[in-house]
Length: 425
Image (cartoon, rainbow, N blue to C red; front, side):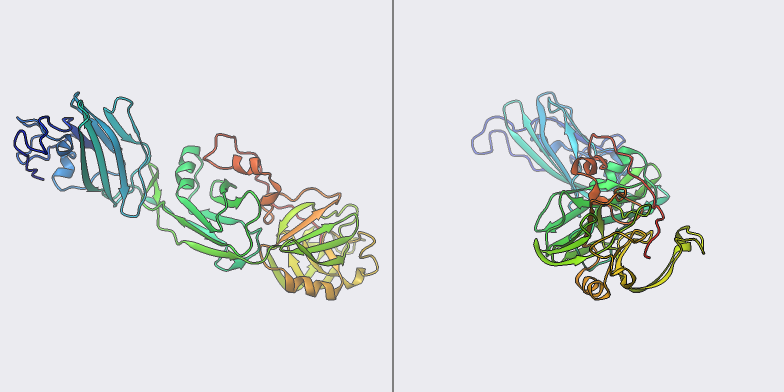
């Protein structure tokens, strides 16, 4: 790290010396100089950028402790720090704070373990002369026993515009500041670009959605840059596989329980209106936005699976065709040939949306996972946001943002589990 210094008076006619601040970059321990004799001091003043040195352990060829903060200090009162950037080999920046007088900069985000960093420090002396130095160091392995991995969902493929992204953590994260570290590291990009945010469903699961539905024919990618980062004293980020999904046409099916009609819109144009029946009194279909979870060409529906005793007046055991699932507890849009006379006129089901076999087959062939199925004007409760499918869109944007660890708002109590509801009939 020897630096050849110009003789006095050299340097394009300048008689003064540039950047006289003495800087120390430290990670925890004492410091050692970068000059040829190992001393951080010199008999002659010189460019402050040439007076940057690492801690003793780094100078000796050892790796830096990732659990200690990165710090840059100007120890010469005649100079100050003007800018510091620290970035690792994968492009992750270390955030930091610079003192108003330029005397000190320290990192405010954790360093990753077993990672090489490049640090660029800019200085200025009392006469306005600038100095700059680029230095590198590598962090060692952390003593942390556990690694926090993330599994993104859904699986790769093409979905409807209502499909949320999911992130399942391998370990629970409860502290809000630690959640913020995780959330900042989960990067979502879409083409066309839309703004969105993560919402913590519980200590191990997050969902991501934009303010409105995704654009049609979009490409959405999610990746984690959490690897190596400290979440807490016993947990660091692990390796995570990225995910890319795409959206198809904008398909939205709206069921009006009062008029007994289901209207299907494709890219905002109505393509079909279907007479239907919804849940009768005591078994009302949930209101609100649901997302298609899957399609099953044949389902056996039995009332005993949802708590209706066999032999009661409400019991049933039916073979159902062309069943499009919208809740995990058993709400479907499906063929109901036994209720054709009521479809378009009355609500007689146990909570599902029933239609003729021909219409159910058309609907089954038209929609895909992630498409929107919305119910209006039912006497039923609103679809719960989590736990029984994707009710994410039933939270308004302010409520959704409140579930992020990066906001100052309190997370609402939206963590409801599934409710078992009778279906079919």
